[in-house]
Image 1 (cartoon, rainbow, N blue to C red):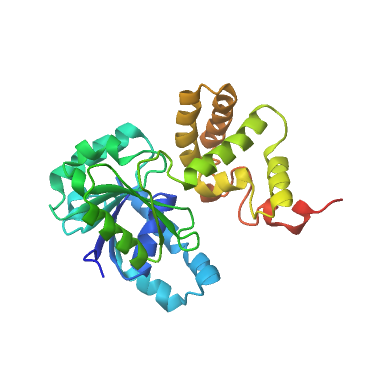
Image 2 (cartoon, one colour):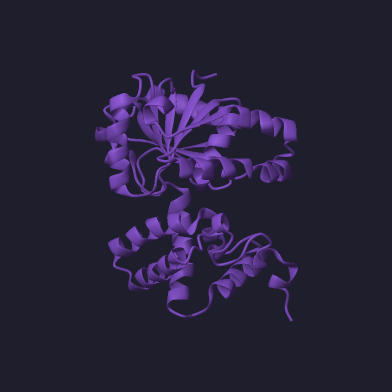
Length: 300
């Protein structure tokens, strides 16, 4: 067993909330930190709403789910959140400046013992290790969406990460029910998103070019491969704000005009409140999205 018992999750969006509950479900004491009361209230609702998924996928009883909830506290004060933290898992928006500012603030108040771990989807630890004030105790720990079921934890250190800290986080990942995926070197987007982003980019490009609409693209992929979802359904589950933050950067870096156009289209959806599963509407409407209906893949 590791000495990591007190976990702070900074950022309570879709994935941050999942990480927080999974840690609590596996017996850790968890503090959820976010920037205001509105975000905290959304986190409480989002985490409570995980019960049906844990019941369906893991057979969790109502009592066991409630026990997990009892191990979670919430705060908008970062110092309170980290007072006795053994690890802080950062899951703030995927914007470089926000992460820089967060680590500068965190480094000034967190205890010396605290390990810092970023759940960044695309950025590498070398980009922020100087901000942390403790590069030896900093690394990336990336979770897949629906962490209780898609239970991988990609672990990526910088050249300055202490190997003992790395090994401790590998064991911690096991303790919270994850399969540790150990990366040997820094790689933007890790293994999972290096593959996933190319897949999503292909779908977005087809849509932006007007080759086919999102439902047709998803139908094609699902019918031909047997996958449970196509790229646009995946984006709904990840959250369109997260996808926009990630793919708008990739589009600009590559100067891909089709992806830039697709990001403009997604930004319009976000402005209309269509955020994906989180808001009940994205490329599909929820619950009971069209791609889950038997007729979606049937020939007329």
